[in-house]
Length: 155
Image (cartoon, rainbow, N blue to C red; front, side, top):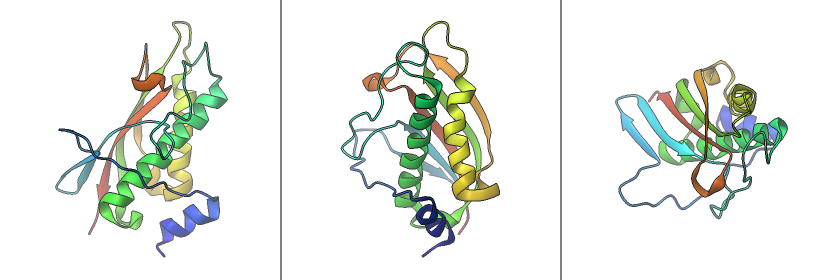
């Protein structure tokens, strides 16, 4: 068992296995040692949203934090499926978080801490990353958060 898998087990996190087939879209696109990970939502294993609604009108910051954390769990599952071993992650270069927000909600970074905190919990310093958090009017399936990222991997 890899060190990262041991850490996931210690944290009580089980990465889901999902059917990621789509037409013309990839969950991950690799260029050299970089993985460009498509937008990942807070979905259940059956791809139904675990959270729905907008921050500031339907959901609290705490609920948004948990949704962003679930985005991270789903993203780690996709990366592990692609590379086979999460110990191959040498770092996370950049993260973009989109947060569906009511017009008067301004705490998108607090929501995105759910993703960022998870990455550091699981990956240690390899999970540190540059990040942008943006508000948007709506996201697919009325999910509150969608996250994309660029990972660096090693052989």
